[in-house]
Length: 507
Image (cartoon, rainbow, N blue to C red; front, side, top):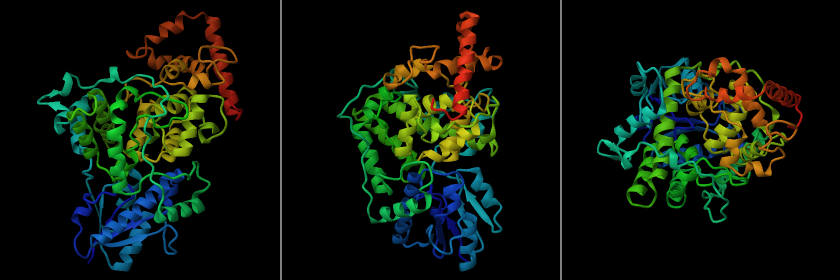
């Protein structure tokens, strides 16, 4: 009896755990299904990227001599779910078992577990740390902090290590990596990959089926195979990595990429491996092509945060995305789906998300995430929005970043403090405030930056929780020094702003 080997859209790696076991007679199953495109309403660019990459990958597997059963979205017999396609292929070919690399979302893990066929889920060894390794590291710790886990991963991999010590004598160079950027017409953007015939066919299909999803399908210029992904990586290492470190937190109007790699879509789909990307950055530093703080800052995002997020997701279990320790329940406002807003920073972050299915980490954390947290938005709605709109979003990496780091909905498991700020931080790290209808210098009044009002309102609402927090508690002394009339004004104006937003007024 043949075995079915399932390859998912984010497992496009030729030596993935399940594919490595493929033997003569096995049937590799790949499928474009409505369930996976719509369990949240994914950005059309993400759907097109994955469908095109899957079709190319299936062709590469056939070229290697594998037997592939590939279901296109418009196939008449498509059952439109992964379990349905496995049952259909099992019936067609007399298969009695399924082999798969463990999916990156509890939703699919549980769906495969419930399949009325024997299913073997192999550990996904494309990551630096296994579930067991992370659980062993976490066991008995009072706090789970990325920095300590990151150091263990540096020691394990030897990346940017000088014997037992970190290269340069420090584990991270955050102090050097917080500079605002200036406009630069010579800054090299990520490379563009014009659609070929295969990609154009997919784009037409996505336009026909998912035109009502948030986001612009065209222009489409992402690579959809490993060759293109490797070119994108080489371009970043050569042209952008050296300046990435100092300016990784910077934001500029109409400059969506700055020095960022935009490699996360390729890494998270499997077209690049995390290890080869980190090795390329470390090699560039060793060869004197990039500064240490840039190589380290980039590697930390992958070896540190990416791995830590995955560890948290699988350690905490399927209910993690439903956590809401702050009991926030406001609906996410229409501006997150492109409705007009007078807040220039949000207009920029949401606008480029709509156009590119991409925003960099500070835009996600300190603009869209910060505002949602200050406004008291339902963290599960925020979680689903991030999962919908970004081309690199999969629940294993997105949920801990959103529920934990961005929205503090897990009560401090991921981050020791809420990532909230007034308009001052945005003004320091961007040029957004200069083009805004509001005044960042105004703390109250009709022209006051909403971040200023909502920042103090948030702290006031949650004083019982945060007053004794060692990283944020001292801020309450500033609040207490304000006279009562000013505090009342802030509360009233914040409430008025939120009421107008809830009424779908343009704010």
